[in-house]
Length: 343
Image 1 (spheres, rainbow, N blue to C red):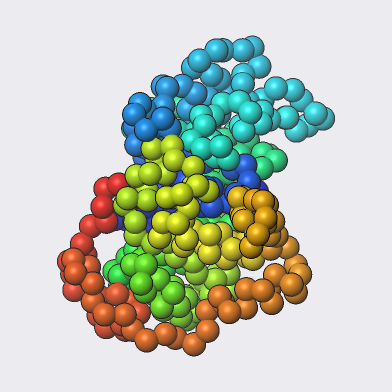
Image 2: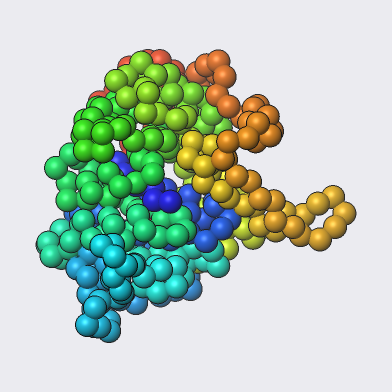
């Protein structure tokens, strides 16, 4: 399944959200840097905690139909023709770098100029054809972005915003244009699962407030719940430094606790299966708790308590933050920046 993680403005954290959600799946997943205007994943992610990833392979090996590392006559992605459809290389096994035991990454190019030669239609087709879960970070997007073919091919759009009034309003305005463009292109609206970066103490209330705003918008029919991730720079740093998200201390971090709940929301909306590795029963060995969000009353019953209910009490103002959307009050013009490590 292909998930397009995107944002409107203000660097709310689409790149981080893509890696966090992939890590929370508990099953193999690939993160692809597909920001048409430049991506810094190759510099930000240090799989061994010390050194950046090698310069190749990158997403340009997919979009350009050739490899900067080892050219082949037919290219590394399109291996053979099967009738009228090409057979694409498995990015989990080739063309990616290991971030953790269950997550591999394909970094993007660092400047928009480097991506001028990329074939976005080829890239979209290659990502859509993958057997496993792919989280493509599209970064900032608009209806004229080169990355629109990926958004249109995705099984779900995951827009990212911060928990303040301005960020939410810009996300809603962007979604109204984006959903309309994709619906016209595909002749059906996309599935949309927004993710809000929020203070861990008020994440549920903020997500519910954002869901209420979206329910009154033109994209209400496309939205399948609102998830949230805790603002946790330390957890993000651990993840990007190659720590296993299913081992302590990262497993117990606010980031991964909220990510597991966000993954449940995404699974319920799209049918994406996910697991919780290393789950220890009361007096026994570790086991893997498998969860699938395909239609079934058992899942809905088990998690009914986690579904958004009536609006929660408004959270108080947080130091250094603008007024939270759940307060229902207008936001001042200044919005404090998210830590750079949470992009």
